[in-house]
Length: 141
Image 1 (cartoon, rainbow, N blue to C red):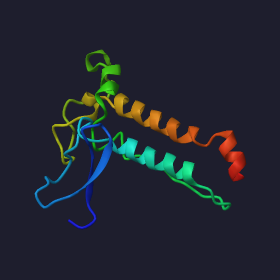
Image 2 (tube, one colour):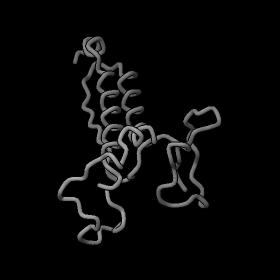
Image 3 (cartoon, one colour):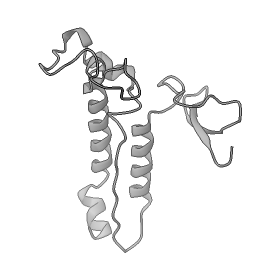
Image 4 (cartoon, rainbow, N blue to C red):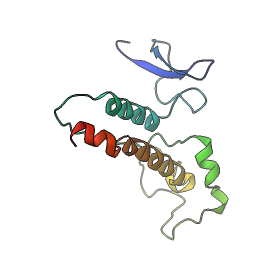
């Protein structure tokens, strides 16, 4: 597979790029135990860009997280913050989706978007805090 890669943790817990092979399973395969979540990867890249930026010209950055939608996952520590049996579902909750959305038996309401939303908020804050007043003054922002 040309240019394709997976981000996985090595034995020391550091993130490493591994080239995809023809034997790799298609579709979502990673978990928080095997590699970083997509929102963490995007945030790390954003923070690195801001830290390394030393040009005079301004830049525009648009950071869009694909979560809280697919992949319907977040690190376990965020699920632990929001026990499913303690979350009250909205009156509009339906146990069965009204039409085939491609994954008819999986409902976001049952998984509760709070863990994923909390993780995104943390990563947004991590990105924004890199735009400190000192950095903004130095960069002319």
